[in-house]
Amino acid sequence: MSTGGSVTRSWVLGLVLAGAAVGAVALSGGFAPAGRAPGIEVAPGEMIHLTRWDLSVDSCVFEPSQGGLEDAFGRVVISLTATNTWKETQAYLNDSSYAVDLPNGDRLGASTGNYVNFADSETSGGFDPGFTRPAIITAELVSPYWESDEPVRLRFANETQSDGFLTAGDWVADRQVATVTVPCPALDVA
Image 1 (cartoon, rainbow, N blue to C red):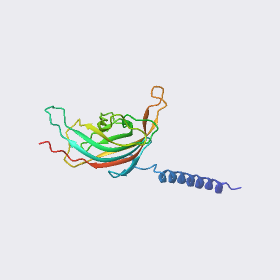
Image 2 (image 1 turned 90 degrees about the vertical axis):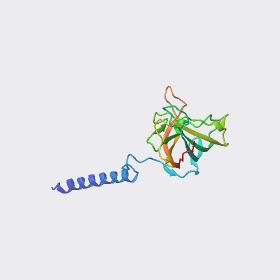
Image 3 (image 1 turned 120 degrees about the horizontal axis):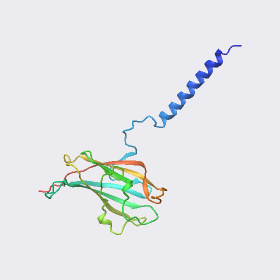
Image 4 (image 1 turned 120 degrees about the vertical axis):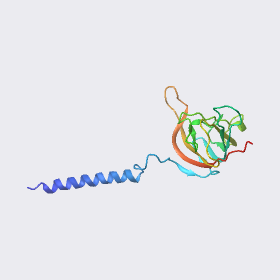
């Protein structure tokens, strides 16, 4: 009665199964670098499809501060085209659906805890379902601006309705689906 062969086979089988599990995790992206931004890179002007929106990023401009305020560094104005694909009128683009990464290192948006003004001055009355309208995102800078023409990166996420006790029905970010890098030249304010 020899048991050496069955013990060897069980070790080999265990190693093969462990290798298969590691291979499956690696193939599904489980060992991807943690710092890499998820979502596909989309060119400015290309359509991005989100849970409640079809969006395209049209342009970006940096408006330097013209006042004498010591804490005012200007603002970034990002122009978009937005279509509400949801069944209800939306007052504005939900702040959980995007964030703005500036060249000076500032990260703005709901997920970062930094302030972004979600102005849509061209869309008073909101976004009715099925209609395409212009929209703008403005980000007040909290630190000095950068060299002219450096790009701004926008990150877009799908949304889902929260089922939390205090937040039931609120829209929250689900997963990032796209990033757009757009040139952001400075306006001449002379």
